[in-house]
Length: 390
Image (tube, rainbow, N blue to C red; front, side, top):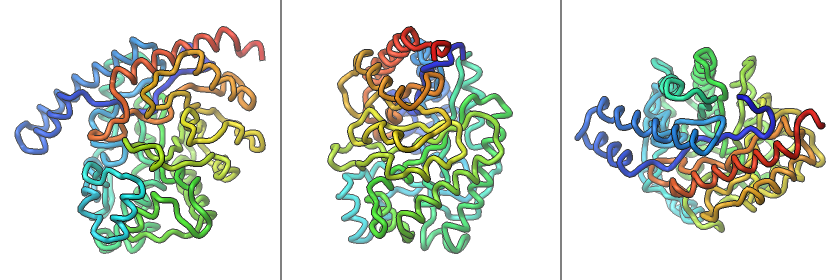
């Protein structure tokens, strides 16, 4: 990366073109082969890479175009997992109530559920990295599901119990797989590995004895017990630290509140101060946080708590179709200057633009225009605040 201040990046996912969605459906229905689907995916990745380059983003992704979703793809790539539609798991009245409370798209979402012993006979995302590096000279980011989110989503009290008596037993094997993957990604040239952690972010809504709505849903689906706010937060931090221990490359943790096309009143709301200071004990280099949506609270959460690493500052609201002007984005970034030096601030959207294939939260054109203005804002900020002036 040429620039060292206000670096621009993406969180990961982009809305898939219609023809890619249709190709995926054709593959699942047996009308095209895996090789034919890969050709469609290759073409789509080339397009989204070129689009990111054209608007000027410095650290890019492949749009997660080869994945069903940010989380679900491990059900296709990691031994021991199977992708199961949430609608098949939601058999109880409690599950139906929890789905309605979040306007959750259960017919579209498929969760990776453990149905065997977990192992890594092949890499999870190395093929994505190698192809991406072959079509761009930009720095590249690869996102992987964080262990606490897998802990809550993947263990099922009936389907998983024959192989692991508890989610605590299961998650240790996933962390082994995750560490192997991170090591190989860095070895093969990944510039940034990001762990996606919505399950931790949703704790902003939780009470000591009252789970957030996301965990209420997963308890109803999977039978996992909520152990109390403090213990859950400590578990999230411990699992992440176990996963990232010893790596020297740039690892970020994306802490969001979930991302699907539901009205704002159904989505998790609350500031990061609820998670501090425990959140700041994570051994990652960067925290990738939402701050454009009003649901995320204020950057002033860092007034009382110091984070010595980088912040991936969410300056684009991915769900709001209104395109932020460069001036609006500059103002959002300048608020972070109260607590972070320019070289510690990266600019990115709040979240991905389509965390799952069937549920984009933005159109491609809007997403690209938002990114274009984010890049313009970074140029303004670099003119105003150079690292040498601090």
